[in-house]
Image (cartoon, rainbow, N blue to C red; front, side, top):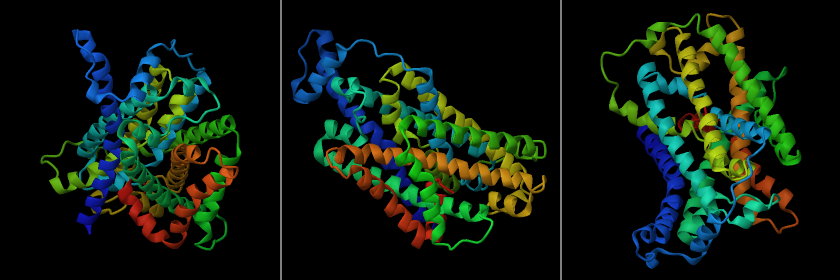
Length: 412
């Protein structure tokens, strides 16, 4: 069973990490063919050229410097990246770190962060370079979706493959989010709720504001949710670090087993997923390359540092560290060294982390579906239905399996 999970996670990882580079590398080769040889006195290497991309690249050079985005847009975009990344693996991280120990897992997480940051910056560069000037100048236009980026570089065949992988990854993670979020709705409810109703209630609570509220209002709501997650995290750290067992910081005398390392690397990479909001972030920051790159770096570094401290706090407060299967579950059930307060803070933090990340994944699907139904009068009904109904149905009728599977997708 573990081998099947490892193969599945590795496939998801390959589809997600490799896909941002593919259109960018292809368009980069074409831009090099257009401009690189001319610097050496040679004509462009015409076999690589696509007239549409060549024209876009030439016109883009004529654009003036982008208007610097307002500070509020920068803050909102940073919060969107932070919130999206926080939820994707905060629940699974301590459990995955157990077989390795804190120091080896922290080292692997650092390597994963560097890889995902490079992937995100590459995708942002691709987003800026391939967006037509007319689309940049139109504030009402939807940003260029990932699917459209691939179509510009690889054609319709590549677009179908990449879009299928993108949708599969997003729906898989949303299934686990609705299932896990429904579990927290049940936990916070004063009276027991029917199991089938909790994913539906969680979906209503979280997705209706996304689809109904104006964009600026929803950005403010997301900012508050991220602040709430950070505040609960500060509470966890302030209570947990003083009582944490610092012996987990000792450098292990032997290297961890390779099967353990191979099993967690794909999950650690998926833990730091926020690439689906890059089209929205790029548009909100007026396609200003410096602002976009800075926002991505700052926004992604916050959850990375948070993960390290959170992992240490949880593992350091779990008794009988080596024999625990799920440290968060043990801490919540036993109460930990700080009575009931620390488990409640952990539960609140996990709920907010899932919710902020769900907002980012819904936004990622919106960038795919909105252009497809741009001219359909029923777009405001079709797009929300396509995004929510399939994963909610899976969460309702396969909730236990979705919740268990979310461990291997970086979701729980």
